[in-house]
Image (cartoon, rainbow, N blue to C red):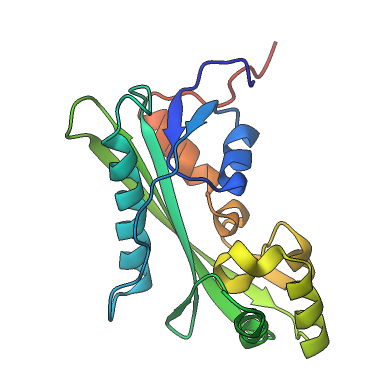
Length: 205
């Protein structure tokens, strides 16, 4: 698949989103946008992920030469507990406290997917918001410390990776597993196919 011409530009540096696109056979370019992802005062989680995902896509769309004129796919994910968004922990203390706050409880993961297509400066924009619920088992302080030492939580919203070592904490999941990873594949494939962008490149005889 690496030899196939890309069919879109992914507006993300996330290796997880790249892996998920490869999983459904979508060859792509990667162009990571530099935007301010700070939440605004009083901003609701659903509005936040929609705004940030769209900003990522529009930033990359504005670079037609860099993206080789391809459609642009962008996404943003946030973890929500008691109505509060949990970002990426910056320190050991923050990471351990974040994980312990999730322990024994169910939290929500929101991922917004945005697809920009067309030509010129005004693209056609289609989007999809996916909500998932993740239930954690009880977690000891020692486990939380060991998990932080693995290095995995440092660049993850909510301070854990469902596809990595953090899987041992997940007692149940309702919704989209790939959405919790950062790119809900069912909804992404639907957006792509509606726009005439193929999935499963190279699949079949």
